[in-house]
Image 1: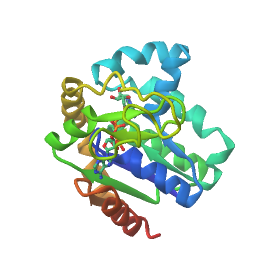
Image 2 (image 1 turned 60 degrees about the vertical axis):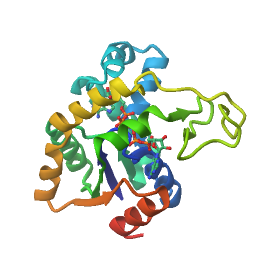
Image 3 (image 1 turned 180 degrees about the vertical axis):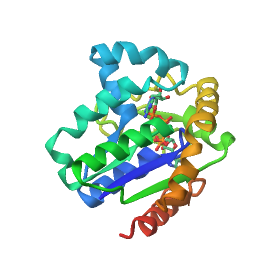
Length: 213
Ligand code: AP5
């Protein structure tokens, strides 16, 4: 099963992808996570990607594709994956189609998370993450048991690009670069839309229905 989760920043793709990945026993591959890990390790691609990520713009396709191809080469992708945050433009969608063709696979489904700008800015600016176990919280929607601390005990942090200003830049970039993929995948009869403004459990129900599980 090869799934793509498509949608605006903060729409809840990661939250749903982590859940579905456990449910289906397939890896959750998020290009944002792969790039953040490269930045943290100060690898060549990471050093090149950091300035784009902090500004809220897209990392050049060549860097993103290199990082993704490396991840695809790992053995756990043999049963499929949930791809989160990739593709983000038509060039990346074409690159994914070529990679799938070479492996003899086809895309199972593209789940499109639709959400308005004001809601996503609130979600992004209220998001806190655990640097230890990678759990994701929201100050008001999904608070941890103890304020400021992950349920695993680690101090929570805010992503550098999670300010409301950068969230608005990311939304503009999304509209210009990524929204054309809605038509791209609709024309290929692969797109299922979910209403991402609903609560987590309701979105989960819609994702289940779209994926057929
Ligand atoms: P990336 O890490 O992919 O960020 P994003 O797409 O902007 O998505 P987010 O991680 O912000 O949001 P999400 O949809 O996963 O929401 P979440 O579930 O966390 O990309 C970061 C940067 O990396 C990019 O700007 C770019 O520079 C670069 N990059 C990455 N991929 C690239 C690519 N392919 N090409 C080029 N550059 C690339 O939820 C958000 C918050 O809301 C959380 O606090 C959560 O608890 C809460 N929440 C979730 N669901 C709900 C709900 N239903 N109700 C209420 N609250 C909810």
